[in-house]
Image (cartoon, rainbow, N blue to C red):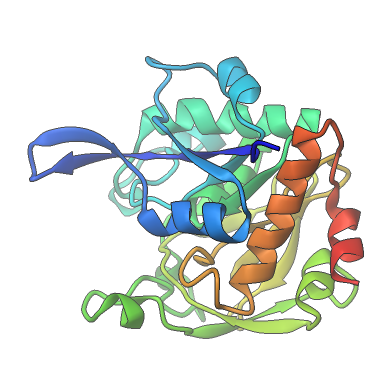
Length: 262
């Protein structure tokens, strides 16, 4: 049987500081192909080239990747400030309606970092522009120097609800994760359940309550070393199971995650 297709949301980039490109991290494709066991398909997230209905037909599931540009604050009713950083309005125009459509249809998605934030905004939530400026919060941003191994090293714990899907999936209520983000959830969107938090109270894991399909999303970057990491591997395995279920005409809601890990 042909493997199901996961659309990997790409980011705009410049090659050699001059050539426009649609980019996707190799580690995202590796995680989808080798751990989720699906075909990775890089999506140019720009409404000039494709539409949400077309994506829903072509792909079985979606990986909402991280990216340096942030969701534009107008998408959650706030004015743009320098603290909000750079933006990618074309990606906003694709991912936000795509998430809403997937939630309604039960089509699986897995949100990572910016993708995690996109899920919240798509469902009516808001974001803090800079976590490290909040009283009592740590600096969650990527270390500016060092090797990739040092940038993606485990930096803080995340604690989950005792009876939630993440605890069931990992077989533990607390794990260690990397941290490479500046923004974070301020108010959760409609039906967004924040199921994991960092020691400083920053939201780190969520799912959409009542959604008919897979909606697990995380603030950290599980695509790093996904085949070997004991936290990353079960996330991508569960996502792969959900995508295969959709490919076969079946739904795979959050409770199915608990059955997989039982």
